[in-house]
Amino acid sequence: MAYVEVRGLRKAYVTRRGRTPVLGGVDLSLDEGEFVAVVGYSGSGKTTLVSLLGGLIEPDAGEISLDGAPVTGPGPERGIVFQQYSLLPWLSVRDNVALAVDAVSPDLPAAERRRVTDEFIALVNLTPAAWKRPRELSGGMRQRVAVARGLAMRPKLLLMDEPFSALDALTRATLQDELLRIWGERRSTVMLITNDVDEAILLADRIYPMTPGPDAVLGPAIEVGLPRPRKRRHMSLEPAYQKARRVLVEFLRASQNGAGSRLQQATLDGPGLELR
Amino acid sequence: MRHSLASQIVLPCLGVAAVLVVWALVSQPVATDLPSPLRTWSESRRYVLEPFFKDGEMNQGIGRLAFYSLVRVGKGFVLALAIGTPIGFLLGLSPRFHQAFDPIVQFMRPISPLAWLPLGLVIFQKSEPAGIFTIALCAMWPTVINTAVGVRSISQEHLNVGRVLKLSRRRMLTKIIVPASLPYVFTGYRLSLGLAWLVIVAAEMLTGTPGVGGFLWQEYNSLVYSHIILSVLTIGAIGFLLDRLMGLLEARVRVN
Image 1 (cartoon, each protein chain N blue to C red):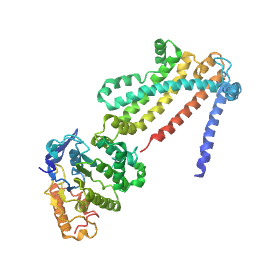
Image 2: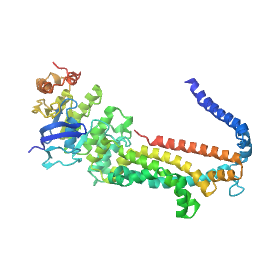
Image 3: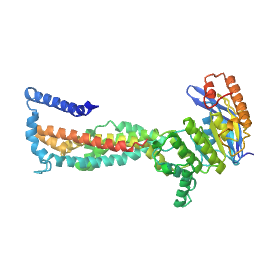
Image 4: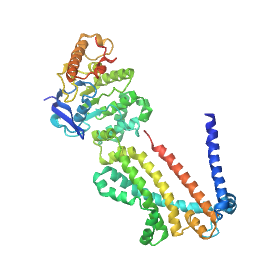
């Protein structure tokens, strides 16, 4: 059995106006230390998948296991980096990270916990801003805090829900590079959810494409054959990069045409993608 | 803008002047017992210019009387917060508690201080605790309701952070629930203080204790009508200042 196993995951939201089936039987697996991305259109149910893996909501059917144990509720062994609004605005950068450190290692002496907290803040290059409140930070800096907090949980699996999608293109590239460096140093098991094909190829070992909902499922995983450590420059010229990209885009296009939605075409043809 | 500063001073002055003119006009031919602005001032000047003199139990400078009222309101207000805040948090946090006690809150909220005061006298047998009891009982509802609303409107994102970290109940409360609802709580405190100040006059009038409200009622009975106006103006001024002070505090707790 793989480190992370997801089998037949189904979820529908029931409201007064009816039932919206979001996930229609999702299967996926991650090995320990692997970086896996899930790529799909906005609104296809990616956040629902993260919430299920994080244990924040209950699936209607299906199983999730991590390191051999079934997932039943939320817990810090599955750290989450949320899309936005997840920092506590009344706490400083330091206290936001310290909250995670204190929660996962309450038995460490206070001085040691302080040291660990500072280490994670330094890891995302935020030491000069450690005493600032989130509202005093730019969007990119806020997401760095969120990443530091996610890592500070020392999770067995780090879930990242479109962590950079709210950022401008330049900041997004910087944060992707930093994530690449940090992951290279720590080799945590990461599942990244994104709607950016290039981001997925740059960062992940394997990529699952997600069909647009309702009843979204994952397509067969695509191996990204690019060697590590990776560098952004010239990467798009590599044959392995172009192959992964072509397979992904073809799958997403085909699944989307099947769903009959044309509106979302814009996401794929956006400036980040450069289809050829 | 250049004219904004001038208009901020000039326009309110014009408003005050207009009210004084209406008051002067009304006091002459219409309500002949109502003292004119000038007469009010000449009969009240000692109370204002020597605000802390004391000639007897009920004949004291307006500053001294206001101080008695403020102390009484302070006690009632603190009591209201001490009772109202935990009730508000419980209402917001526990659906069962809400189901059990929300009807009672809604039922007690509109009851007038005039109705509570005799009951307070029956319970405590003395006017001072009865007054404070009445102030607390009338003033606590905005705190209760705003706190409950504040707790219920905490964003799911922030609560999820606590859930993922599996924070203990205590840390969940101190790190997330209390700071997140603090702006609402302080709005409740500001409204509660306003109500407490409203209630003080009724409480003092009925119990005849020294204070601005007691003074007002006594001067009515001794036919010194200008002192009624003095008391009314004092009550308004202090109420306004209290609201501004709480407004400043409220602005300070708004972090996001």
